[in-house]
Length: 79
Image 1 (cartoon, rainbow, N blue to C red):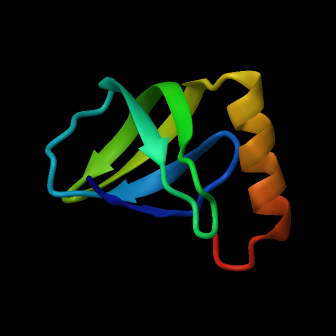
Image 2 (image 1 turned 90 degrees about the vertical axis):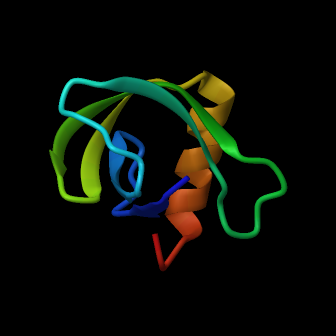
């Protein structure tokens, strides 16, 4: 569980109490404001970690979820 900042189609910054290290891999579900279902990122990598924040790169997102994320970002003012 964490809070997402600086969301883009390619990745994001996450603040979380869960410890991670650079080079870790994981999957995540992004609950987007106003969206009924989360966007699923099947494979993401931790590219840097400092304290309770870490930067991620989305390595694999299915086309339908990538399209939903792109649509959301094109209309979101607080991403």
